[in-house]
Image 1 (cartoon, rainbow, N blue to C red):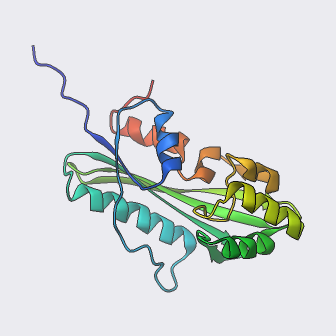
Image 2: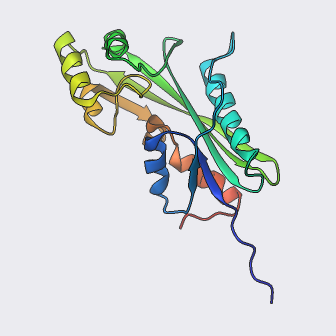
Image 3: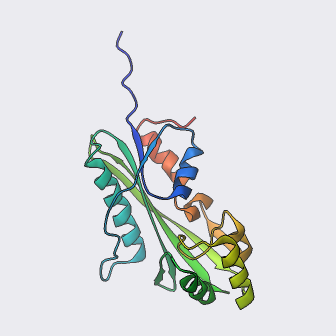
Length: 198
């Protein structure tokens, strides 16, 4: 009697500790590899196209060294009226972002792909999530940023932390998409590859 073939290695192609924490919720064994790719948007590229292209590029980059793995690639682009909002990196940039966003809505385009490197099969999708920000005062913005320092987060706010206090409302099919890894859609994609979460 032949033994069942082992499940392919699952790899998260990301340097984000937030995505790692999200994936841990599924209680599947996985490893993490940070792909080194150029994340510059292409000219005339729509935000969701940028996110999708980069998610796929990250997965394919990791596949070069792990040709038999199942690889999760992710990317997120935040937009305000079509303007892309990246990671602020500095306090000054975060202040500018939050001032620009107060009282307005931002769409977070979270791209997800699951790449079966061995079979060269790619599932990919963008899961949008809309966030409306409170009409914050300058002092509230300063207070928030000093306390949480979300300088590595697109949109300068961590919804899973104190950032919830700067948000007026959120709309979308999967709250995990806002943090950068749409788990509901990922579970569907894994099942397509024969990987059951429960």
